Length: 109
Image (cartoon, rainbow, N blue to C red; front, side, top):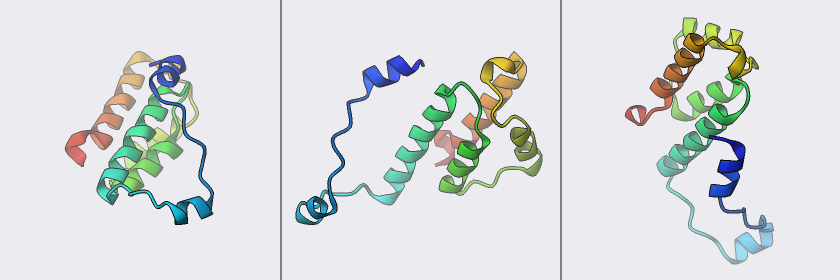
């Protein structure tokens, strides 16, 4: 998905309220499980639409989901940190996509 598509499909964010406005007009917050799920969806979308792979994003999302990633897989992903997707072979790129799907897919909720 291109960035243009993402910005076209996402509403423009409302202005960030001040602390006074939040206290005066509290808004219902999402339940934690729903919030975490939304955070992971947004983070995975960011990971896959960036021009390069970020192991920082991957590890942060794994912490949110409390997923323990195999050490050998983690070492391989660290070696790919900041490597542009188009600089990876198709096989390596597909393997990283598969690891992302297995780690953050709905089956792991």
